[in-house]
Image 1 (cartoon, one colour):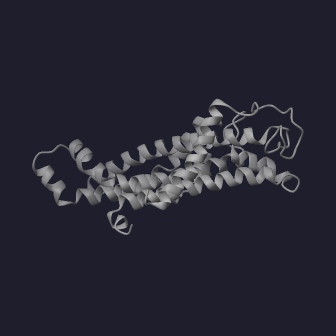
Image 2 (spheres, helix red, strand yellow):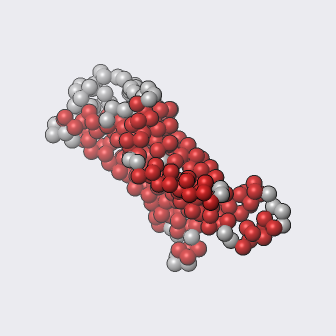
Image 3 (spheres, helix red, strand yellow):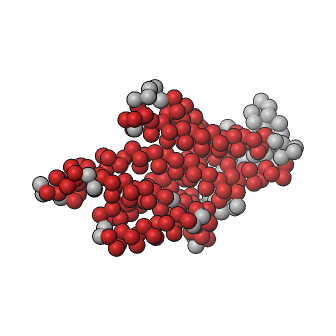
Length: 269
């Protein structure tokens, strides 16, 4: 509780999570309901108004929160698992293989994440699973590179040498020494990747490569509202504001986790 960044990040992130959970059980209108008037202002029937097709804006925002978090969390889980495995493999590999893997990770990191995700989606049909797979694969190298560095740092410690001398198996060293010592840095990195994954999903949806209807996406909402921004600015402000709050919340959680996990920063509280 003494980490203000962590508390603020949990509040912002928790608010969006609550909206997403509620949308799974209830929404004011059906996502495909176009019975409302086009670009209606906020009122008793439509609390935030309607979009250019007559759909309830609040309903679209709630479903967009669910889609953003589903794709973001799924991509982080996939990219984190693959990145951790790659980092462990590179950390335990022989010198020449480690050098090859390090160069490969540098090349993948230099490759634009959004472009790599677009290439993956181009080979598949646009869907929630395709978006999760594309963004998760794109962030694998971003997770693997610092994981590799952390693994090599831990393996160079004297207590790991003592454990190996005493006959501890490699799986035992990984579970007993490596993972407990790299989890703070890994947790901070994954929290940061959540915000980037949400932005990547919004970018893909803005380009028309996101999940197809009736799945609403904040990026797709921004694309549709850009032609009516002067008539109905709320259609642009609302999804953009939620997107910003979600990314800020994820970044604050990352900063808070770093403060909690780092003994040097804990001493400043």
